[in-house]
Amino acid sequence: MGKLQILVLGILALVFFSPDLSAQSRGKRETSEKIKAAESVQVYYFHYTRRCKTCNAVESQTKKALQELYAKQMQAGKITFASVNLEEPEGKRIGDSIGVKSQSLLVVSGDQQYDLTDKAFLYATTNPDKLKLELQKAIGKR
Image (cartoon, rainbow, N blue to C red; front, side, top):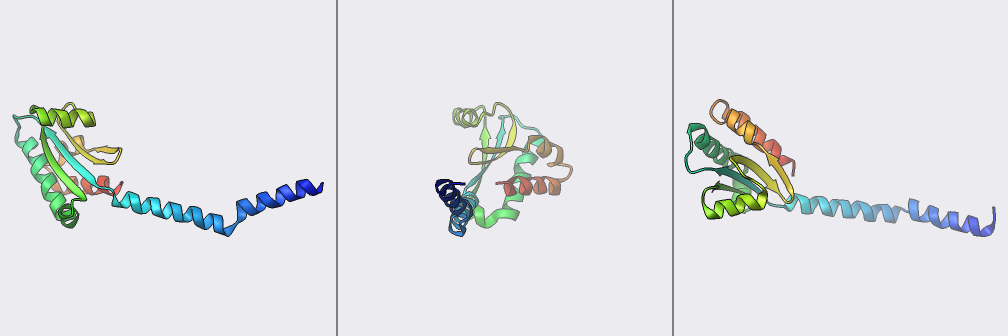
């Protein structure tokens, strides 16, 4: 092997195995996790003007669960809840911006969306604690 090849291999070894470089990349990863953890979460319940007992329960049980689980984060504005009527102009605009066309319960954080609609309608009246757990799982995914 020539001197030039040994020199190139030596430089490559320094670049790939340097502790300082791995610490820098580790620092970047820690920073991005902190930024991600600091992101806000929006919980949206999209509905129509006429609502049944279950529709109303989805809204009330979601609000109750969020208050029980995340009161401090809600007070700080890190987690918000909005009940949005899709038949009103502002509600339609919000729904269109997220891509919602019908009744939905969504947890939104940045560009991530977690659709809890099926679970919300299944559990709101029959097992509110299960709905609470599903909300906690979705918010924990952010």
